Image 1 (tube, rainbow, N blue to C red):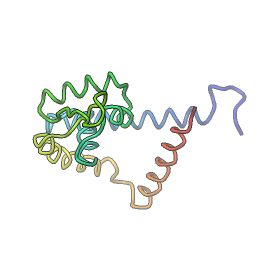
Image 2: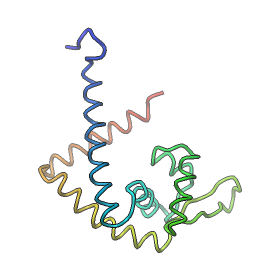
Image 3: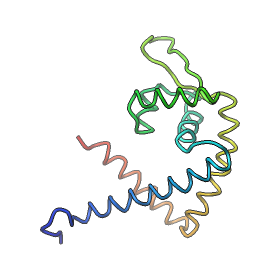
Image 4: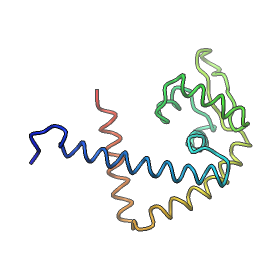
Length: 152
């Protein structure tokens, strides 16, 4: 039964717990990734999405959607990652208005090192979760991601 006071709504509390867990994971795992590999976590997220994409590249707008940044925000982020030598910009051969961000060989090398560190730290963070727990969590997160996409 829901409370008559809107601030006591169970979903507000649930969402807050989700944000808190995400924030703590981001802080701790991001700090470890930065300390051990010298790679900020958001850079890791960009590199892994590019590496898992066709031809190792995504349009800037697709990348912005996946990373949850504005187009101008992803442009500034790609500028910084490009300065590090981990990505390059490629023009679209069919549309001059479209640019791709593409992972470089140097980006793949640092991503490979970072993935080992990140996977190890994630295994520690999720150590008490069994395979059924992780499967259930993945299913719930997929459903939540779809529901979030359907919000007008």
